Length: 320
Ligand code: DP6
Image 1 (cartoon, rainbow, N blue to C red):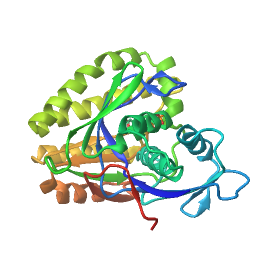
Image 2 (cartoon, rainbow, N blue to C red):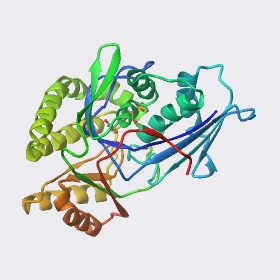
Image 3 (cartoon, rainbow, N blue to C red):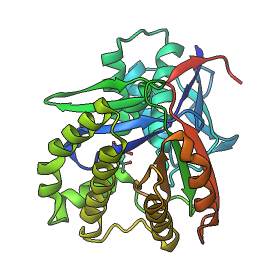
């Protein structure tokens, strides 16, 4: 009744923002992401450990805030009459700060809890379970470039191209390590209900998905850069125009975007993307990684820089 899984966070290049069905957590739009290699979340599940209630330890400390969502994820995998569970989780990057920590946490929890309960699911079933827990988590079950298709009553995820066929580096500029004020789940609904730009965002998404997919097929970095930056800025425009406004950026976020612009002007193959948080992810071809890293490290307000290649799907491991 024990199992441990590792999942990597993923970074969306064409973003998921908005839900079609809140109760089933079905996204209103498809999305395209890259799964990372060097950032990870490891989740150990201990089912039926004689506990009287569920318990979540994060980096060795009790975390009651995330527990209800993690417990609900395990309920949907194992069944609601399940024994109580101890969940031990650790990550090598800040959580709940716009670094896709929910994607890796829920992907690892889904895989580990299925194994701890001795259940075997198809990839399609695991995808639905992870996606129900957190939309972006479904993408962390797959490696490399990944597309989540918003297909009617369920979601479908496919690998667009594997890790080795188009190597990239992602440099993450951390500008704030405190958890964000409003989580994505709540913020998406605020946008849907109040942002005057929301309908346009949804209407244009298929076009962005087509452009990004075609750019990935052709290994056309410049075209991917254009669509990814535009899609990111459109999502943030939807957020900014929500009521209350959802402004996740700080001054260092903007300074990092300007650093990326300067690098582009110097011929560096890099683009930025930003999720529901103040961190900036600069995606580049590997030969430009050192220059991108140096520029972001020098950017005022950047607290820490992390780097990752593209990586691997969620998987079972021996506990570390
Ligand atoms: C801005 O997957 O965290 O990172 O399904 O409510 O758990 P829930 O949302 P979540 O949202 C991710 C939003 C995003 C964009 C993206 O990753 O596509």
